[in-house]
Image (cartoon, rainbow, N blue to C red; front, side, top):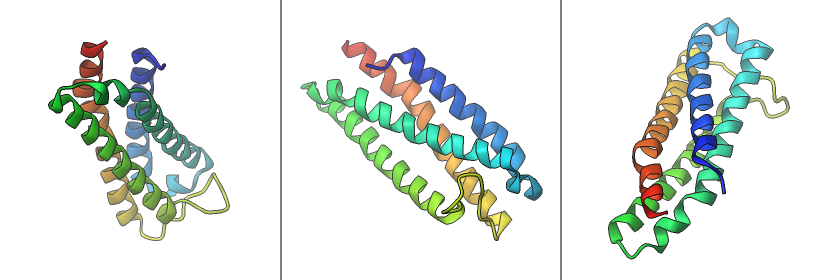
Length: 142
């Protein structure tokens, strides 16, 4: 079982990478650097890993509860996980190089930036929801 400290560390690291990448990616020339691409792929991998860990460790206790509201929280978070995975898959298919793990394929920087910021906002909102709603609820049942 993963600890809350580990989840919070992941959340902090995801937030930190979002902030750094938001800054770096504004400059088109930075998007093609190996360092920036490496950070971006680290971000994607960390988000995927975090969602997988939450999915594997958080919902079973909530779904066992006889309380319908608690069950609904679990179902809503599971649904959100599916949606984030779907968005992330489409995003990486569109913007990430297929043969190289250290390159992005950006033809329209403005569109890339808009979609990247939307992705960051979605993931950061999810982290906030986990921290404020999911983790306290799971702790209350333990």
